Length: 198
Length: 323
Image 1 (cartoon, rainbow over the protein chains, first blue to last red):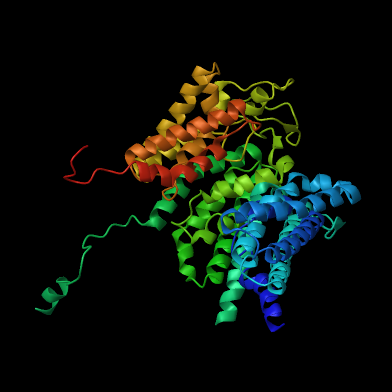
Image 2 (cartoon, chains in turn blue, brown; image 1 turned 135 degrees about the vertical axis):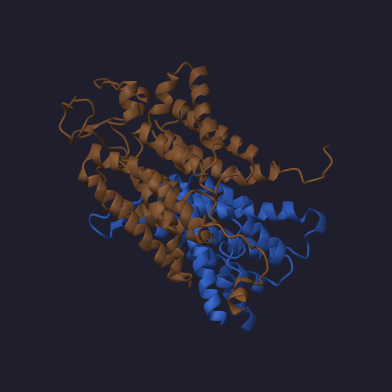
């Protein structure tokens, strides 16, 4: 059980999938236009991440090594389809906002990466812990980026106006703003890291 | 004997010192921009002087802030590059922008355009153009509202009140706006036309540019190939070539921004390619893009391609056998 928390903690900062491993950037950059979309994407990602790690780990003894990637894809695709259908049924507006990026979770390199690098080689409990940790890392990153971009680009947070008469910098809800935002987040994390290490 | 010995200085090379350093070059650029700046203030009123001053002062303060954060000595400020960035940014702003626009613009220019990469010499894009591109995509309405010049040369006082909004010559042509009269070549050349503060007067920018070329601060290849390319492409596409090179910010961009030492190729051939490419992208945007003016993006695209140009076009080493 001690390992459980170590693996959970691992994904939050030390192996943060977006800011440290820098994989799965496309969905983060594209969807983080506002906090609401970021949370929706984060939850969808979390569901697929945890369950795919769980099932890949469960099936690891029966998975032939040569065709493991197609099997991972089948597992991930199953949960992505579930998420896709659930969101489209219960929150059509969110479904429209996230658009193609929900089905694209199938090929999200973070999820395949963790299946290949972690869940395929570790026990079920550890794989769940890793899935939870990576998901927390992903969610806080995408929500933080969404908050930066929504605040600077639209002047709001969760659609609530924060500062009256604030002239939003529209560039932050455009693609260049996403790159600037994630650059600043990476720089911030590196800076905090260097302070802690000292 | 002692005085004789004092003349003998034993030191390692270099032995010959010249006064041309970065600070000197930057000051020459500022001198060269003064006529166009004064003309802009004359044409668009004293308010544009405030825009220019706020832009320069905030650029210097942002630079000082960044140097403080990076724990660098503040005397780097004496290289005047922040002043040039602030001045160039202000010259590419419309005359009636609110005063917080140059503050934000110079902040983006200095912090995100220059200092995050390690300061002057390590930036791969022209900082002033980064600031302008940021402002243009962030505040499109403010950045495209123009006014008629207050003063006109040649006795023809403008009929419209100075505060009424108007359109730049390029926008009139591009968007086929009706109700506006296109200025003549003479007015385009002199500069008493709607436009950014410092971009309108082709004559005075040419003067400043020739001064810089004479002082060997900038290479003549980039402005010449840039303007010629714009001329030829507009000829090929049946546009009025003289109008295309005089209207908009081509002269400001070609002489003062496309010639930035840091963000342009090192070799002579590379410089010509840079000018041609900038002219090509400028005309692509002017002819097919959504913006009426493409100088700033044209230069930015070529800034980004500069490392590729430098890698492709390497000067032959002395004694190297031609393949």
